[in-house]
Image (cartoon, each protein chain N blue to C red):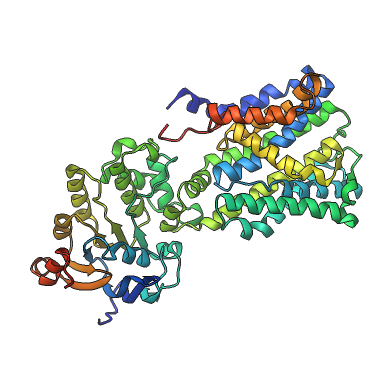
Length: 315
Length: 243
């Protein structure tokens, strides 16, 4: 076993431990950027779970993300200011959305999945823009009041507190997914991706397994939507538009689609490039799409399986 | 063909057409529990089509399939596998990114993940029985073609089938591997019936109780090994002449 594989289980805890002191090291802008990265990172993890682990390439996780975000924002408007309640409600709404749309997704394969999920994402974004009574249309929904993570705890009034809250949620959720993927359930999902003919020949209900993965990914995306509202205190249809879906898929491809930690790192790279590098350097300002495109081309040629993607047995 | 209540598999008038082409036409077959049936015929005879129809990965355009007294003609492959129909494929189907041991473990799990009796130990035994004791942690994608074929056999056995469909298990194997396969097949318990499709005739003759011969999608002959060896219809089929 290579040293890389031996150390792999420690990669995620090490990353989280390294991120905790950033709350005291970084300035406000960098802290806020890192918080946004974690939110996009959680969304990217849901995309990687489907694309890299389950073999369902998706451009549609922005749909449960938006559903989760609007659910959380609606709760804030109804004076529910407990972070965990917002999270659970948003994750539940994302999961329910996935359960309802699963029959459209889990029987398709390859590019067809990509097109169906793209349509679902665009449809959800359009509905969010038109359904004014619920979403306030293209004006978006404000959710000014900061939540307290749990009843009795202080509210998240500072960027540092918000960062630590988001980091904790992402650590717990991604940690749970990583543990599940290290269990037999993960092996069965990878087997369904590698060869569903053999899975069926062994009596396994492949569509059922993919539905569970799709609903779990919907719950993760919904939870990411709740975190978006906690961080931005606002949600609009644009938060789940095609550009976000493409950005997240780009993050997953760069990070390595088979690796959830890779998806987090990929999200860090693309959001930092978009919001920080291209936002703070005058010479690069306004050129974020160009830089991201270049990054993608370099990655495809030099790291075809991404930063942390698993090499195939033939390589 | 008479129906015996003891028949595990009953195939009646089974046909599969692709437009005007009949890949299989009106085939009848009976397999009793513990039977060893060889299925031979020249290329294009319809052997693999028949196997895929029995396994459920192809739907017939005519006829009926009963397994253990139940009509399974319209059931998909996963449902049939759960009833006890196991199989291997002509091109070995393994899960490349998983280690060999995990391939057998996943194949041996019941739907939604519960391990069968014996679990990990049984999976190790199966790997050893097919000759893959030293490659438990090797990714299946890194195994040779022959090893993948052996691995898929272990995977099929892990599901504890009552009927095992083997689609050319000796194809691409080196002579020592064929010998190992022959001894492995001979050692399988009679609790599992086996339908063996194979071009390696010595292997089939050494293994089967009865042999069915197909030619151009039609049934030509069923008999014991000596009957098959001396059958003029079989000789004609292999000589490329319509019997």
